Length: 261
Ligand code: GTP
Figure (tube, rainbow, N blue to C red):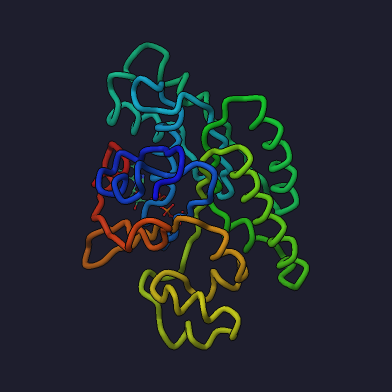
């Protein structure tokens, strides 16, 4: 059963498995180790959301929460020119497309909360068609306070992000870094009892470090989970959680056109 509204990724098999692309109104999580390509994928999605509708885009603005200052507009334009030359080589278009992406760089959870409130207003007033949070884990792990109050704050943020997705009916994409792509059983199973069910459901995808940082509510809040991993020198994007599709994996490369299958 397909959900209403999608942002096509243009990764053919993945779009088919996702019933058209990244769904509107729910959270989609990109999980993977450092350097696997999560940010590259977010850049591509930003371009796709900002492109004109007659070129298959959503003709909208994008709010990009760039926690680790990894957004590079030069790279964005490079991906645009190589993937969609008919749009990006027109005079002034590359700048116009890049200008549709609003970058926010909160340095703490509380600053992030403030950004979320600003977003709520602009989601209504502007034509925002995609929200990206790169990375959720970095934001949470950057906090000095690690106790129960952080877990409580995090619970609140997760509910708020979910409600933003629901009420604005746009795709919300969050990235999370895991330490290793293949789980180390002994390390994972030594983790606290309440986290065990999640880890058991998804042994290769959730490391204890991430579960500890984001809390157990996190894994349940996301509707779609895409896991990026490398195996024998080949990168894969795996649909690890979906209400409509079985787990499927697609090999991908990162080229001058960004992520391609
Ligand atoms: P972390 O932020 O470290 O967790 O990693 P990430 O998963 O966000 O990785 P990112 O998206 O930054 O991807 C890094 C990979 O993308 C690199 O290993 C390169 O293979 C590739 N990459 C990054 N920039 C370029 C570029 O300008 N050209 C090409 N061809 N590849 C690039």
